[in-house]
Amino acid sequence: ILLVLINVTFLYADVTCQHYESVNVVEGNTASLPCMYTESAINALKWYRQYPEGKPEELITIFTDGNRTEGIFTAELQKKDKKSFLYVPNTSVTDSASYVCATDALCETSYGSQCKNTVLV
Image 1 (cartoon, rainbow, N blue to C red):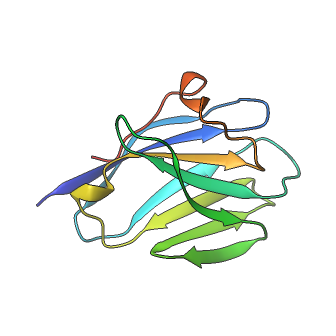
Image 2: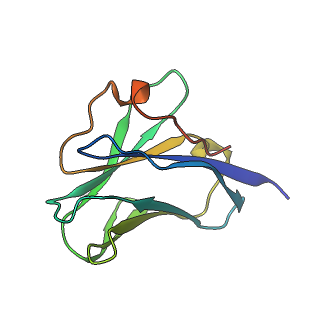
């Protein structure tokens, strides 16, 4: 059995971060990555992926409650509960990376210095 380890980092307007060491998933299964934020009202929530030594890559943006799929990724937003999930289907070792959620458009390329990353291995 091969496990895939996912790191998740959260970046908010007030730079409040919640850090999860890792999310483990059996290869081939769907990874569910959680994100909880503190703002009472947001315009959008974005999910990014960053490989070691790489630049952040925007995966998906979600604006309203419910689910949105883009490519292989599905994001779920629950504004009332102030949380989101990113679903990564059919995981493989190539999905091992740091995953970041950011509210609105406030994620800068320098976010790594503000929040610790979590990794999908």
